Amino acid sequence: MRWPDKATLYTVIFGTETPAGRRFDIILIVVILLSISVLFIDSIASVRAHYGGVLYWLEWGFTVLFTLEYAVRVYCAKKRLGYVRSFYGIVDILAVLPTYLAVLLPGASLLLMIRLLRVMRIFRVMKLVRYADEEQILWRSLKQSRRKITVFFSSLFILVTLFGSLLYAVEGPEYGFTSIPVSIYWAVVTITTVGFGDITPQTPLGQAIATLTMLLGYAIIAVPTGIITAHLGREIQRHRDQRRCPQCDKSGHEEDADFCKYCGGELEEPHPPTGQ
Image (cartoon, rainbow, N blue to C red):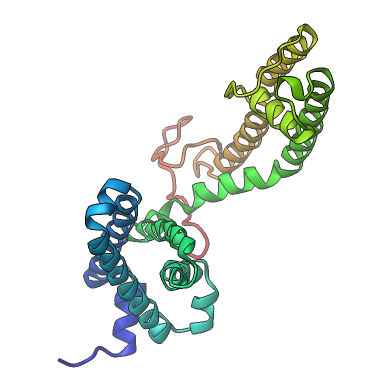
């Protein structure tokens, strides 16, 4: 059997336009999911006690298979260093290293969960890159709101430190508030309305502070959502304003609209995202 040339390998392994390329990616995703399933099953003590040997060799089989796949990718990549440094290249190598490291460091096998990131290749198979425009809207919204979010979390950090320190001073080690970090942990759990209940104030003053902390948590929990939503709304509106009707020159049309909602004229097809 003749070994495929580099161009053919590249088309199959890195491309999804050909039937062979799509089949390769689908098979790869199935194998990745199987390897993750083995890791899940191996974490169950009763199953590991009976089938530990089988699971061990299955894991090594998947590791060898992924190692060969990575080597072939490096071999046929047009820009080898570019692939090695890319997001997928880093994930691909991290997906195989833990098994080899586990020979020296037994706990390193838990890092195999990194393989789950490889399932992101399904976006390429399903051609979800066509939604890159919507992704850019969301990304720009997050980027524009980063300063406000940073200020919000900085203020929140000051608040939880303040309330944690107050509870440490009021309650003290007698009621479980053994240190300021532990008290800050209580403040975070309370202000986020999680409420584990492992540490609770017992004195009237401590309970009053806890009540204020809970009410404050309800008041501020929606702040980051509101900030991002406001920027997202502006980005969506700006995106709609870019699509104008050639007949009446009015904007504000949805991405999937075929006709103008004002004059009924036929709209031009939206421009594809840059670089696609």
